[in-house]
Amino acid sequence: MKNESRIRHLRSSRYKRLAALFGGPLGVALIGRADLAAVFERALAHCPGHDSLICRATGGVPRVCFVQKMEQMAASTARGGETRRAWERGFLEKEVLPCLETFERAFPPELEPVLSYTKGEIEADLAYLG
Image (cartoon, rainbow, N blue to C red; front, side, top):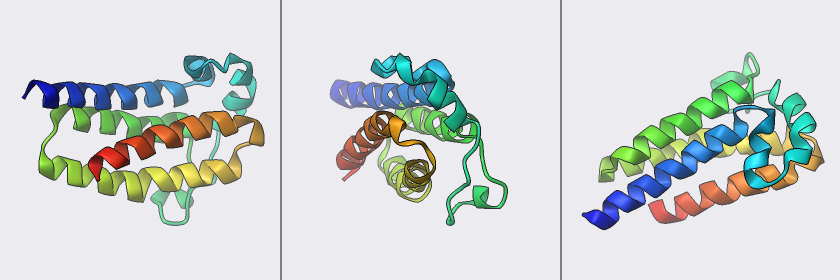
């Protein structure tokens, strides 16, 4: 039981960090890349949206929509449970990874370290979810 509690805490912390990372231009300082703040601020202002997501019709603002997805994951992972983990896997695969694919196409190449870090964190969690 104690181990499960620790895993839930670590997973929740992961998504809180990712929410903070995308929450504003200085979020990149969390991964030691404060030099990217200006580029990141411009990139966070608009996203064209992914074909499979509702945001495609209107575009999106990653500092809002992606942060909300990360906060939703943080809240969900804090609770745990087998059914919840199945939902989390589906959410990551159907909502979050398409966002990252769009970011990879739309963001400038200078932000590759940020996107690589984010994708690595999400893939690590997907590996846990099996």
